[in-house]
Length: 241
Length: 188
Image 1 (cartoon, one colour):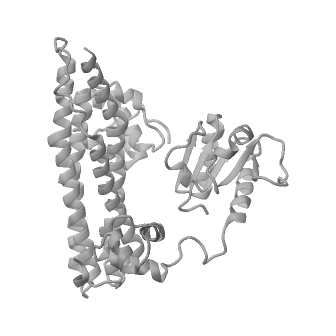
Image 2 (cartoon, helix red, strand yellow):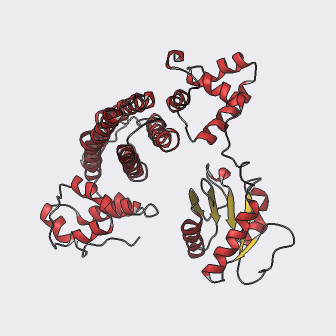
């Protein structure tokens, strides 16, 4: 897939890949962009165009990841973007899937106990995902913001104490388990769902699970390849001062 | 043809590797294609079903390539005929259609007859293990209950996950419930 550039019309980018719409929304940009170019839309919205392009190109191409361009962006901008993706999962995507699952049960006239299991499994997944998001928001992001503040203030003396290399192991393991559950749910619906159920609703659920999985993958990639190395570098600089 | 398979391309030629990757993805739909310049393979590379590499890398690092994996050599011009012995070769200078045909030939030769593939049903023993996993027992307890070694339990669990495509305990529990292997009152 070709790279999207600043001179391209925002509308054309969406025509090329409509899955970008929720990502664009995350920047506070809303549909109805007329014939404006991406550069113009970003300038109007006060968004760093290069950052915007790096994010949507990485999202569109699984093989393309502009780590260097992204690492040149302010850490706080990246954290703020990640927080918005959290909001999107919590306020939009998960509730949508949950409502589809409710519809799946409501539409099942005959008693299909498998569907109740789907609901139970999804609620369990949701609980774990939300706990993970919360832990990032209450522990990880504030820590990163603190490191950034210390690093940005030139007068900060050498810091040893406050820097506890926040445990990435735990963090990655959590991530991994939550992601595996999502993959399992998707696979169970695709391969093993049986009995009487509504085809349209079930396929809508699978679509949304694919979308969620892709979005989370993109989110994880930004954290692991961009954010973590940036933080590690600032920590190192602070220890050496 | 390669559904579920992972491919590793070991080549120092960026464009050759990218081209091959694109062809494999377009025509054979493998699950994953990874390109590496280094023979020092990553953690997932030992699971690769096929390794594509150049004659130079193969000559030097033959012994380091993942054992048991099928190797295919990328050549330029020479060696168009089938090799007498050693891994199959693909001439990367051929037109795309001929490369696709050649790859198909190689993959088809390795395909197992229908029904004996990797995705067959669970064995009786695997179902025993699955039932116990779903009922909340840990590996050690399962080993004791079935009078088998811990190692055997782990190997059964790997096979179950591979066959079903389900990794988590709650996913396996759900599968067991959906298929009537256990009932909801069995869950601890």
